[in-house]
Image 1 (cartoon, rainbow, N blue to C red):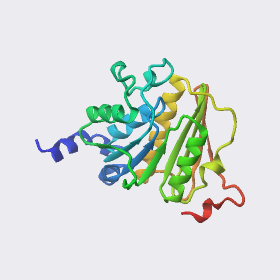
Image 2 (image 1 turned 45 degrees about the vertical axis):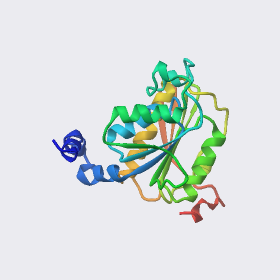
Image 3 (image 1 turned 60 degrees about the vertical axis):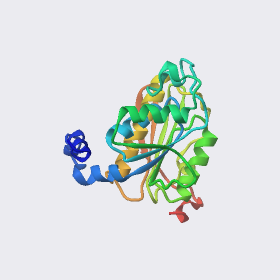
Image 4 (image 1 turned 120 degrees about the vertical axis):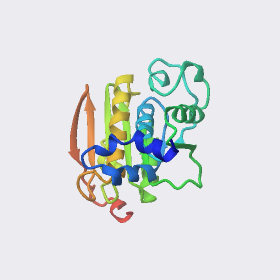
Length: 231
């Protein structure tokens, strides 16, 4: 069986999903997603992107794999033997082992992503990454944990920015269950955007997760925000 035939067989059932079809699957295959962060929330997200058939994933994280019980050990992505290794290389190794149909690379300045997923562990990093994606004209999704919950903000092209949507407050490191849920939600949101299945045009939404329960609301542009002039 050729590689093309093997890839077709691998995603045959997924192409039957309502609204996706061969066209949506091809959009996923052509996508180049810059993933900022490779920690506990990013682990499930990275695996979902690779298993869904995203063609190229750029991993962007400067930390090492830690062995903390509530940290990388709960990320779904790393093995105990990878503790102490640079996250970026450990994540690439894990994703290549999970799927032969995805190209996984370290993010570099000459990369040309078509979308961005931010799974940063700190709010300032999330803000900076979201601003960079916005100014580059890239649709993006931001996941930011807070203890037993957190927030996912989806910003398709033309939608209110992360600064407009996010409500500042205390942000605690997400616990393992919350991190996994946030990463999974963020990955699904990005897949919807990339496959052009996200509802509405020029609109975004915010998903707040609290004690396992999500609440969804559309995002609203803050009066005077310059994000309306970027896209």
